[in-house]
Image 1 (cartoon, one colour):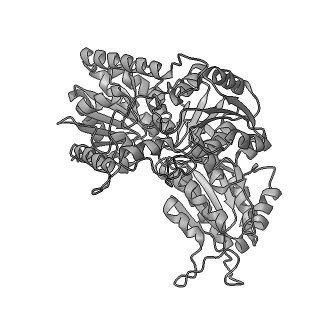
Image 2 (spheres, helix red, strand yellow):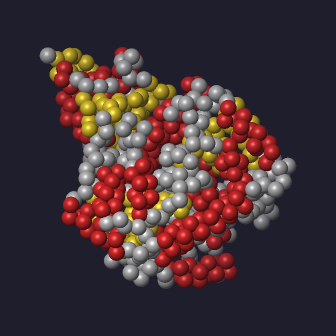
Image 3 (cartoon, one colour):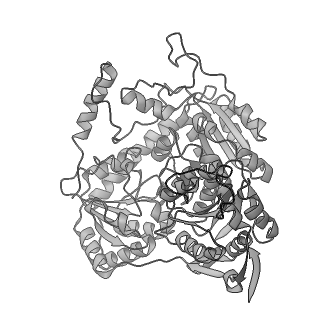
Length: 625
């Protein structure tokens, strides 16, 4: 039996019947479709979404990149078991997807991209927005999505949709391969009719695997752990993706092994768990970084070992340090010449715990006492940074975080991605639940926070969702505030005004570039951007887009505004001005290095001095072989 539908209609109907299942829990794979329409998709996918509005919810976006960010936020909060589709026209609408696609793929978050494409039948050449490539007639701007997609196909014939759609679902639901999936849809093919087999539209369930460890690798991992005297576990984003937080807690409690976390892994243990020692690496805590420097075994669970985590190869300084990598992806399991334990994070941790309990293995009591005392000292430093002695003064950025920390409970979700906030949050934020801390630091994309907050709120409608943004990242992409207002999505935006790129300003100073081009100020008489701060009113901007805005001028104002925003059932922005970008924020300094190359030759004293310091750090880098 067949049904005659257009390609776009068939795709929408197919997507509405796809499900995932893990641990006996079944849910819809594509929860909704975001769309901005142009000539490349309005008569195809646009018409299909009208045709099947009863089975495929539609969300109206304002920026194509932002729609992908919203889909990513939804997918991450849904534990990668459900996501959204995103449709755009050909041309700038399609190329605007590239940044969002890169973010999704780097972070291993599933999202389905459906850009329109040039005519397959080529009735006119070129058509509007067509990229002409003299050496290749089949290239369009959508080919820019190939390197940032985990799967890419161009559906140039109706019948080609069937294998393309099935492959797309396979990749979206694969815990190793998942990321951005792109199906480029020529605008004429979208509207073409075809007789589709009814089986194509039958409900289909994609089981998300939990592979266990190979027995030989597991036995070697147990021997390695039992031989270690100063082991340290690093929890990465794979702990959350696997929903392995409970298994990690059981492992840590059974063995006494301390647990540090990457940006993606923070919250794997709550901050007050005895074995949690906080963030690791360049933006980590002094406790975790000192343990890393003296560790004889590093157990990486679901981590990619990025340069921030390893302090650009300078952090793990123990002369005999070894690595054991529990990861579902073999590519990551072999990093740093580590012993691989290729398995799902939860399955692998459960198997390790069971095997180690048979040997009653625990770290020495002296080691536990050491990291427990160090952790307490670090918490005192955080208290000092959070504390505001004078309630009637303008707060520092750590004091802003301290005010929110004092208000939040385990139900709150905080979202951030770029600027100076990620470093302060990784070092100081006290995560109270496994999904409270939502930092996109794989791509660290400015503009991610507000649209991602919308996606998270759609996945967790009963929880307070906070988008923490600086003025620089706000100016990149505030447009989805309109979507939040339109749909009544009660996100909370904490907008921190520090008049520039605070994080890059500090880095610029450290590397001898003298904060050039990092402050939002008028030009001074000498031509530099060192005049008065620009009279930009971002609170008024947010208000003009329909958001309720609460202005906080002092610490006391801030506390009151945050409480009011948290209780609000409307999209609400709390606007607070902190110290300017060239003033020390009050957060603890970095506890480990990060490699940003400094000019090898220069005449300005700041650059010369920075190069000397750089060479000293570089000399400590190790290749773990």
